[in-house]
Length: 152
Image (cartoon, rainbow, N blue to C red):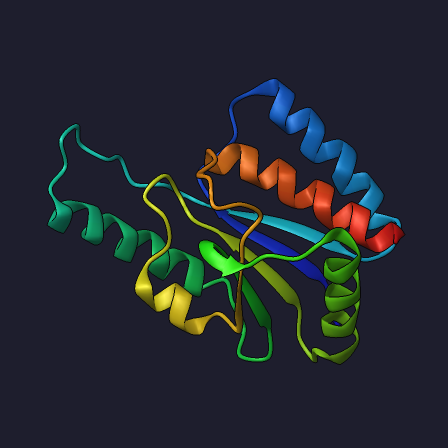
């Protein structure tokens, strides 16, 4: 594995999320190289139509896909993805890390989710809950779960 990457839509403005991400990022970097790559988010008009929302997901998806290499193993965070216990997740993540030629890439969409193209490119889908979380919070939760998996 070349590196562990998190590709996400939008910037985090909340200091408390940034502090948490920094804390867990330092823990992760003790074990593996980590890059967090942000893609600009598209403004969503109030009362956007389904077509407008789809166009936004497509634009954001193109930006995400530009940051993914052919040999990367991509895990898309999706509400309908596979859920793991912490020990099972640690085992699965270590297995993937030892077998991927490129980078292990996690993708977090914006407030409207991921485009179909990004989901199709993903090698697997991961869910931490059937509940919906703000994408800023999801970035911190993902970092915490990766750090925990590397310790198990």
